[in-house]
Image 1 (cartoon, rainbow, N blue to C red):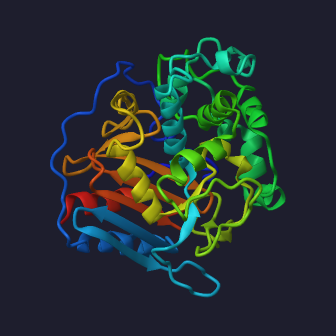
Image 2: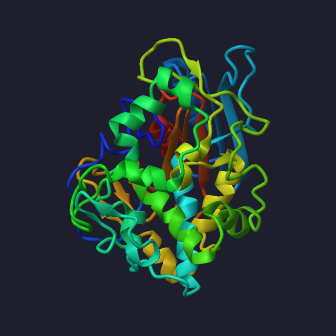
Length: 387
């Protein structure tokens, strides 16, 4: 299964085509997992990377961290103009992997007694979510993080898609700087997808609002809080939350899109203003940093036990029986029965995934520098299931 996130091609919104349907609303813990493959031979993972490049991905980079140490591999090119290969040290836009960072900060704030996930949106942002049946008085912070709020996805708005997710629109508007409030207003042009808490649908708007709550609760931006609470303590030296910065710091590769998912000539979409994604998908990182973050989170080093249970409390997704969604994380059952905690992160020209075993001891972070081809799930299967 391939899932796409904010600013992905016009033919795919993360989990809204493949996954966004009515779900069972009962909350339940993840099921027991088969033991993960932990051999030091990553031959199958290399083959999966090479298959992605043969399918049309310009280049791929992956880093794995487990009990045996750290291992990296690359395939293909990072620059179609110069032929420069991908590097294990490449920084890239991580799209909706940002959501796991945002959820972690909100869970830390709950652990500190500064807010509750059962608080309503209106308690923190009075009057922000209203109109066309949307009502922030009935939506909780927990529902934002779990995508059970019913708030429409602003990236699904036809005008937004025409402005930013088509080649002509992107050429003209790639450096626009909409505010979070403006992004929310775009979403609220539509009626709710469902009553709060009664179903599930992926909506980037949820995390734009979550970022606004962080700022209201702390007096500092979500970017500042992620930096001081997560990036600096974990020494994530390649990770940043860019504000007003349109380039990806070096070392990095270029990012390519055909906008409609076709096999046409790819367009370089590396440079853009991440204000288009805000707290739903603005961050930049590299694979080693992502491994370190997910290992710390799943290993219990970032949030207390109570919040860790909340993080891992999931809802079923009817259209994807192998996936359940928690709070900024997905519990995914792979082909061999192994369960990993994961999230995808696609933004124009960049498709990423991070995954970890439940104990945080076997992590993987992967990036493709194109958004029209490739199967990230095949790489996960290869790493965690082996041949």
